[in-house]
Length: 161
Image (tube, rainbow, N blue to C red):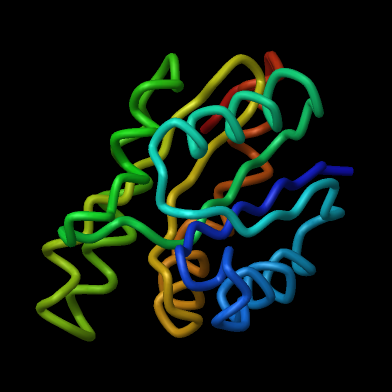
């Protein structure tokens, strides 16, 4: 069973001014995995808070997968990629590249996404955009590789081919 942590990064959401539809969309989509939501929070677009939350989920709660939603664009308050980069140990650029490539088929705005993916300890971390539609489009691209990736992070010695 994959333990999943969902972090929605939204100033308005954290103040209760907006319903978190993106985090709920992640919950719906991960049902295709053998997974359970072990932690879920809505926090503001504050770099230190994002870094701390990722560390707590990975190091203290021991989740296998952290999915963030929000803060991946170029607005001044979009700091999720910087926070993620500060706490990961290994970057997985192929996942972010695959999400952007697929999204570009639908909108030219995908090229300004700064979403990233990486590993901290034994935890896979993937940044997703902040809208439910973009979550659906991006997560569906990497979903088929998540279980295999987590198995490898945990030391599965079987061949990948």
